[in-house]
View (cartoon, rainbow, N blue to C red):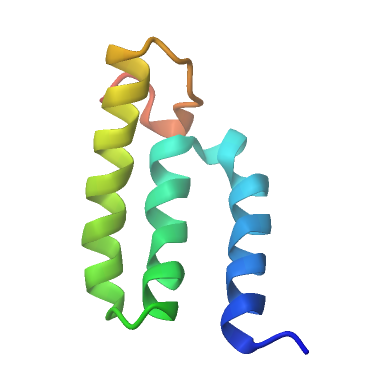
Length: 79
C-alpha cells in the first residue's frame, strides 16, 4: 500500500500546485519544503531555513538570470 511518507509527499505536491499562483513561488516553495524536509529526517527549522534559501536562490536564478516569469504573490517587488 501507500506508505505515510509517500502520502505526505503527495499532499505536499497537491498543496504546492494549489498555492503556487495565489501566494507566489517564494512563499509556496519555502512553506512546502518544511514537511518535505521532515519526511527526510530534518527538523522543522532546518526545513524552513533550507526552504527559504532554496526558494530565494531559485527565484533569483529563474527570474533574474534565465528570465523565466514566476508568480511573485504578496512579496511583489521585494525580491
